Image (cartoon, rainbow, N blue to C red):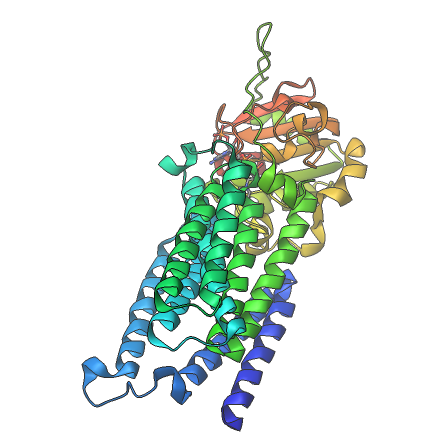
Length: 468
Ligand code: NAP
């Protein structure tokens, strides 16, 4: 490898590291994305310039020219990527992210298979990393496909049980590792092929059996974990094909994905062990026994008279705000309340919406100042002094069953304690449950009133009341 290539790889790694650092804060995130994209561009161009990547496959005949194929692949991929990214709705972003994680894992998997097919076998370490690339890339791929299906709400969502799942998963993991060992050990061509087939099949299936039993509410954490897996697979692929920039970028994705996973586990009061190995609790509907209490509905006009007198208001946004695209209307209501003399804060739950930072992104787009966006931990101690908590399209993240009902599947998950406010407005369209499919006792509390309708229409009407 000549000096120019090494310097280009280092420059690309520096752009990645700077990019990740800037992604840590909402106001520098755009710049972080841009820096990372520059890093990726340098990496791709450098890899293509490195002679041994395309080898002698650079002849004048287009069909046998590696550059022609690489450029065609980049063009086709870019067109698909741009069209897809432009078409996708904000509400469909999490499943897109899940699928893209999966493609990352699939790429590493295919790179390792191509290396096995086209290049002579390396030393034991390189062979072991090749086997591990296949293993982790396979889990990231099939696991992400299941996560995508569950989020997209298609037939996959109904799959949720694997009998004796821990035994099945342990057996698949061990069989797959035996495949890696068989390939890496000095053995004949047939044994090596058998090793590659065993690890591929075992870990493709393991991705399915690990993610199928994970409950809906835990899916964000699993997606973040699969993201870490796709990074780890890329890092191992870097060792297997001796490519430095792949090792660096894979480690960055793996480490940041793991840190995000741990942060999300903490936010949901879960351990990674419990997430992957505990048996999912059965879903629980409304409490049996006695007629169910009905929520009380309030008109926008009556809600205004309460809001108009409020000094301290907390807005708790959730997935429904994203569906309704109500963020600009919410900012308008916030301005009206402040002009009326109220202090307004936003309480943002870490898993509100369908992707980490979902609410922050939407509210930043509507120019809500960052300092008004408080975490649940910051707002909860003040919640009993709040005059009105306005829950806009949130459900699971304000469900008191997480605190009160030990048999609830979400028991132990920290929530925004909206129920402690003097009055709670819940803005939603009807009786729909949240992502976890659970009933929410908050809606029938004595201090809660429901304002039914699309969140954007309701918030716009509430804001309009302040003008009349
Ligand atoms: P949620 O529990 O999914 O509830 C959303 C509520 O919004 C629903 O009850 C729905 O009720 C209402 N809604 C939908 N469209 C609406 C509209 N146009 N106008 C008004 N209301 C509307 O949302 P959440 O409280 O934000 O909780 C997030 C859930 O998603 C958690 O369970 C979390 O674990 C999971 N999750 C999060 C992520 C992440 O990374 N943030 C990723 C995947 C999953 P109606 O149908 O009655 O209107």
